[in-house]
Length: 327
Image: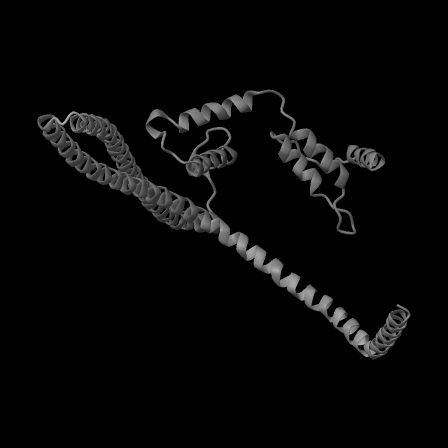
């Protein structure tokens, strides 16, 4: 390829019908349109070299100029411009600059049918983009509203569950406290009953009728108190069992919610497992056919084995009979 470029460069130096141009790309354009008699380009390899050389920047002036253009396009009052709009404005400015590099006047752009058609289609594309943007914004708004409502619902459910949990905990603490109080009263009533029994036994030993009647009243009072306290204790324990059932039910509901969230993922896994099972059943059917064949062959050979086993049994019986005779 180096030889070809060198050859083409030597041929290019012999060209004498080239016009001088103000712009270097216009000058090289008239060089590269030259063709051979066969119809091929005359300077194919030199074309690639010159294009690569022309794109090399000689400084950062163009970059700084483009940044200043962007600053003039996107001002404080036009910060809502989209990327496509900014790109379109920059494209139009570049077209104006290319068409009239000296004055950069838009009215000097040569009009043709393609530019007019593009101008007509631009408005249609603009309307289509506006409608698409409206639909997307409406869709996003609906999704955000749906997410907000779902979040609100979950927060309300969480608040309700927390209230239920806190109320059950408070009720459980109150029942435990009441149980301890009842247990203290029950202990006092049992001590009173013990004292009454002791006094009654002493009064009977000493034949003290007055003391016996007092002890009898103590025993009756203690017994009635113990019965009332035990009934109250049964009610408290029944309430405790109800609270425990409510706690279990709340835990079950939470587990059900967690399982419902993971059910969607499980369905996908089940579909994959079912497909693998179907392939496995197909393979097991093929593997089952071989044992069936083996069983059929073994069933054919079974009569000979049965005859052999019966013969062995008869011989064993004969040997046992001989031994019994000797004994």
